Image (cartoon, rainbow over all chains, first blue to last red):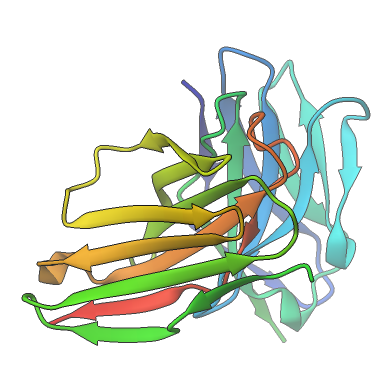
Length: 112
Length: 115
């Protein structure tokens, strides 16, 4: 079975600062990895995904993530935080049995 | 059309009521999902339909009954719910049933309150 662990339930950064949200995965087969963002009272929006190929993946809104097999990690970064980035972020993993599993989530706060 | 549409957006129901949640997509996706999300928690998988057939049921109580009438529609029938079933119910779809490698498209959810 696959799972993900998000380190830090709450991350606070200043506007313009680097955003780093951490995610480690566990999977018995090569995983598919995802980052989703959720704004209050809304559904989840896909930010980016890793399936195969290039380990550095770029997503929407300036976010990117790097798949590191040796570290079983898939951390999400953004060079410069914007106020509109404040939201809940979920890392997720899927194997080949079509049941995507989510991490506990990290709430990102952006200070002016 | 790149959306998953869920209705209603809000629902308040008594413990003896019967109600249904509806989900619709017109992206040609062949896998559809129901997730339950409690406040400040991640979504939890409830059901997976693949090519209109139920493929995963995560031991959900029988008071929740899913239905997939066709490839574009997914319903969740609710009966005799408990207050602890109050949550945001999210519907999602994906292009196929091979590990969801395309990622899921989520609807905005139905906020359910059981009184």
